[in-house]
Structures are given as C-alpha cells and as structure tokens.
Length: 328
Ligand code: PBG
Image 1 (tube, rainbow, N blue to C red):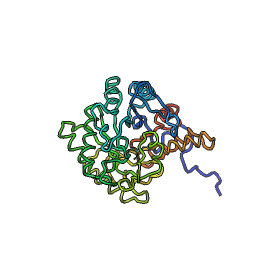
Image 2 (image 1 turned 135 degrees about the vertical axis):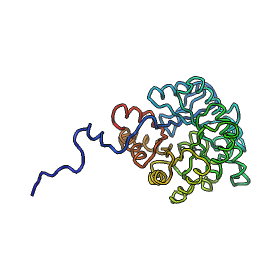
Image 3 (image 1 turned 180 degrees about the horizontal axis):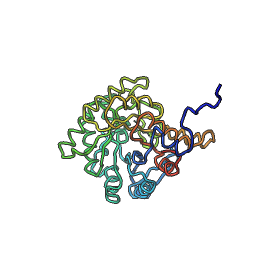
C-alpha cells in the first residue's frame, strides 16, 4: 500500500492557505455601535460591557477619531436621553441627543464617517417599551408615526442610513414613505428584520437604561424557536422597501444568517450584541478563554454564515487583527 498519501486539503504555506480561504473579513463591512448621552465631558465605562463607554456629544469626536484611525468608518448611534416620557418624545426632538450627536459628527468628520442610527422608542419611553402603550400593550399603528418622525429627524440631522429596531409591523414602509415624501429617497433603510426576543440584550439594556419596566418584548420580538417566521419577517421588510436585512443576535443565530442570505437578494447584516461581547469579556477576565482568538472566530463564523456586514463592539479589535493578519 502506498503510505505517501496526498494531503486532502491545500495546507502548505500560509500564503497558500490564505489564497484559498473561503471567507474574507474586511474592515469596510464593520459597523461600531456607540452610546451617546446628555451632559458634557463624559466618557463613562458601561459596567456590564467593560471597554465600552457612554459619551457626551463633546467627547464623541475623540472616540470617532480613534475609530477612523483603526480603519473603521461606520458607526451606529444609540441615544440615552435625560428625560423619558410615555411617548418617548426625545426620540424625535430636533435637539434630541442622537440628533445633536449626528450634527456634531457631520460637522467634524463630514463624509469620512458614515453615520447610521438605531430607530426605536425603548431608550426614550418611561416604561421602556419599543412603542407607545395602550393599557399594557404596545400600540403598533400609533407607534409607526413616531418612528417615522424619529427617522426623519435623524436624517435631517445628518444620518446617512436609518436602522429601525422596534419590530413594529409596517414600520419600514412608514419610514420609507415619509423619507421619500420629504425628498430623502437616497437614504437607505437597514431593517432589524430578524430580531429575536433575547437575553443577549441584557448588558445593552443596562447601558441604555432601556429595560421594560413591566412585562417583556415577546409580543413584538421573535420567539427563538422559530426559523420560518424569521424568513417571513425578512420577506415582508423587503416588500416594504428595506435595503439591508439584519439578523440579531449573531452568534446563536448563524443558521438565520445563512437562511436569509440564501433566500433574499439583499445585503445581510449580523449584529453581535451586547451579551456576546459581555460573555467574551467575562470569560477572558476569568482566564477561561483567549479573548483575541475567540473574537476572530466569532467574526469569521458570522461571515461564513453569509453576513455581508458585521455590527460589533469589537470592531476596533477586529480591524487591528486584520492589520496583524490574524483574520481577514
Ligand atoms: C433597541 C435595541 C436593542 C438593541 C439594539 N437596539 C435592545 C432591545 O431590543 O432590547 C440591543 C443591542 C445589544 O444588545 O447590543 N430596541
């Protein structure tokens, strides 16, 4: 018998291995989520997300500068208002926190930094739900008007793209219609289309103070047992005019990323959420896992599953790992 078996895989030099790699990770596809809050001179660390901060508008440019320096030129803004009320009025206020952050970022960086906003009510409502309430229930249709107003105010303040994350039915169409009417036909909508009711958002809700004061989000976010339902949501958002379809969270939903990729002819985005970040940080702090390698594997798995765009709190680290040739 010939014992000199030819290797099954191309596994010669690193140059060869990189040439035949099936998945590419590119800095241009990274989006960094960032929290902005009222006040001045603030850069406070988020306790459940070590290494992530809440910034006031005046300290924001420094953070964006660092990001640009690392080679990441896309951010997604989340606002933390001082004042919350029943209808989340600070979400669509002309001088709301996100609106002011957008103005500042545009003034300082022009088109060098691509600005995306999360469009939702939960950070702005006193009850912490993603829409206006009627009794104990979120009222879908009444919320659409507020979401559209919010999206429009973001675009008027300088947003390059809006990303509705509320999961109300019909919100993509409502936002698209209002933006078109006001002359913003070129502004894309990235829809959080396949968004599960998930415990992985826990640290985010600490960061933004947006946990619901009663009940949960299961009436409008998806049941994590369901796959077909996710595709149905995505297809409806395509019909309504979405330009990019997002799956969220990423790590436990890689099957959904692949399914959306195979079914829908639009760019796919995957959001590696706060709980994914927190688990890696906690595990690494305890010395149980190797942080850097885990970050690379998590990112590669999302791209391998089919994502075109990756939203991650590790954007800066991934950019560095790409530079160092550890992923890419
Ligand atoms: C707003 C929103 C949430 C996240 C993104 N947009 C919280 C939620 O739905 O409760 C979570 C992001 C993260 O966990 O990193 N609705």
